[in-house]
Length: 141
Image (cartoon, rainbow, N blue to C red; front, top):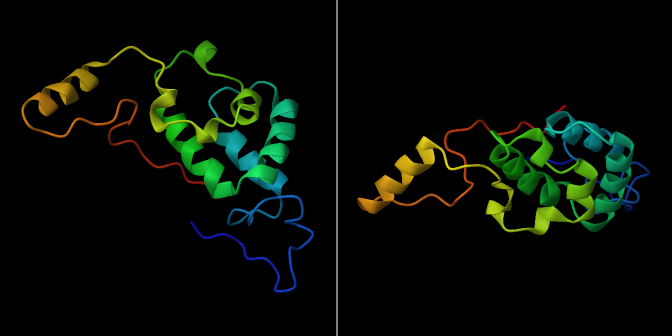
């Protein structure tokens, strides 16, 4: 992922108040938020989520949040929406720092059981919550 660079004499007005650089194609942290919001599965509490995003971006870079968020979103596929936390909750609890499998909140599927059988026959057991053959989230606007 390529990020926009800061000016040679320090952070620009666009990147003031955020840790690191902005995501490629984003002119502000607000643009980054809209990009993340677009992918987040539960669309409630947008104002609180926007505030939480600004707070989170002062603590962590876009990549430090977006990479675990993408993994977590993919792990949520098949999870009932009422079991998915609000985006503000996910950000305020700094869940991007959680272990990778924390997003698994679903019943084991047939595919999961088949993966387990493969591991029993000498194959590698995938980490629980690691989705198989799912497309990457494109973080560009």
